[in-house]
Image 1 (cartoon, rainbow, N blue to C red):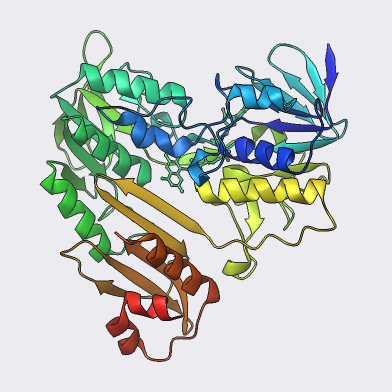
Image 2 (image 1 turned 90 degrees about the vertical axis):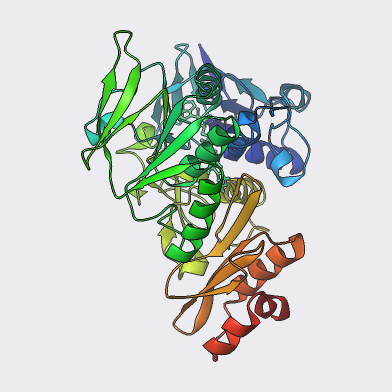
Length: 427
Ligand code: FDA
């Protein structure tokens, strides 16, 4: 059977949810829009999976975190999609796409045609096997990308209560999962390949603050080493992790957060790819004018970075690229070029930080690293290009965002260091 829509979104994650919301705001007609997702639920705020979802008491559960509650807007439940005449095809993978004939083949065997396609397929976790280690399928080895992963993680965590948890990787998935596991009273060891956590963003000084905080919550760190193999019991469960430094860590459960791959395979050979994602212009339009790409899968030009294309794996960019693509599709004449200030945040234990811009150049730390509020500025070619703040108020976060967006010239570095957060508040 063949079905036809004006607009089709492939993927049912954060970007899909925000795109649907924008379509409705801009007056999409009933029956024009369809979302096809291999997940079993309507689009939701993925960051909740490593935060509220893993709490031991009063954990977040759907429908509480459907899009767009993450930006304090209405909650798009399945009823909302129905009321707005949007077809949600769930539990269904898109098997192939033919951008020349504007046709998708889905897992049920049906074909879906479109006039405009939005690719919002996100990314999938890098598997252990890709690093030469086997064990991904073990019952007590967890990844975290979607709701099914989060449900498995909660079950494994509950059945491993009081036991040893190993977290591989020191990025935000590793950090947020380690915090949640410690809150759930597991004995957590983080295995980091690099010298400190969040190595792509944090300076050693910032990382040291968080690592000390984690240690105060009982989390141990093993650094500069990687997993080489697991030991398994007769049921195929992991019982220990063997590391490249020769040590062995006992394990009741393992969480792996070692990176992601963008889901581009449907379009390889059909659309131009860049930076591992689908190359798009300032309108989020790909090399085929009927196909747009948004969220983690899109490599888009970032004016802030001097027009170079980047693929950002952050929720804010998923929300905003999605909204911009829909604006460009529905009201092309009124929609300007996408101008994005990169933004990333995380919440762990009682801590919470935000980062804006780019972490290149010289770093200047400010604030009280033994207290609650501190941060850093990155200065490149004499201009402020990046700002980090832990423990800020709404106004303080807005101030560092605004200061970073303006990229002010910094003439006196000593003065900047002296003023600290006050500098952003005065810009
Ligand atoms: P997303 O992954 O949300 O959605 C992709 C969708 O496409 C999925 O529904 C998938 O099943 C579907 N799909 C893929 N291929 C398909 C196919 N062939 N057919 C049908 N469906 C298909 N960011 C941040 O800034 N701060 C944070 O604190 C966090 N925290 C966080 C926690 C966790 C656990 C994760 C996994 C991620 C975060 N992030 C984050 C990152 C953020 O969630 C991420 O950038 C966005 O979800 C990206 O949105 P997309 O819609 O691009 O992908």
